[in-house]
Length: 93
Image 1 (cartoon, rainbow, N blue to C red):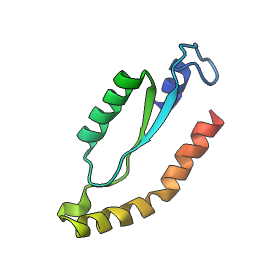
Image 2: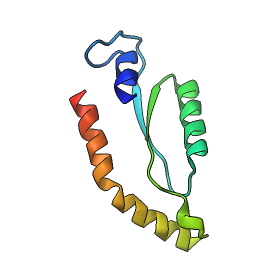
Image 3: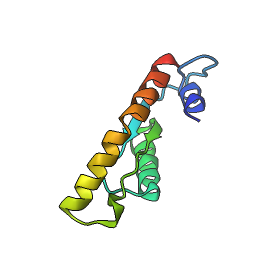
Image 4: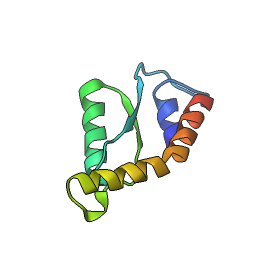
């Protein structure tokens, strides 16, 4: 999907330029996928960009407050490798 967005934006092999920039959107803690996708759509509409979303497990494990934040912080640390791979793929494309 990301490759298709890159090509649609006018970047990468087989691209058809449309003048739109790409935005890699990494959401904050305690977000569910519906909220993340809604926010990505608003970013596309408001700023005229193609949005690629990186989502990591950030539901807080059902905990609240500081405990929720600490749980999500551990999840984010566990996602570092996946995030690095996303950046490497984007660079390669």
